Length: 76
Image: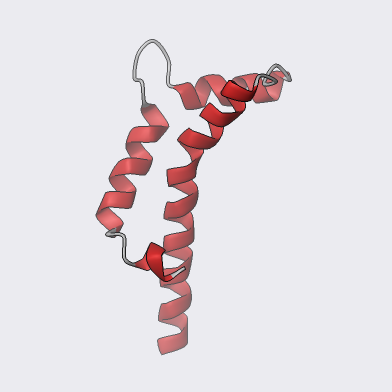
């Protein structure tokens, strides 16, 4: 996971924020795909891929922050 530590944090934040709201109009894909998931209509492979594509930067950001917190705990 050292490769994740080499990605600048500000870049992960920007990409995660952008992918969460892209495209802005008419509705962010993430909102659309989560709604489809909750309704049980998320069945096409392209829709599943699109959901994963938009969530991946947020998962990477969460992992990066978690690793930073763990490293800080080990130093103390």
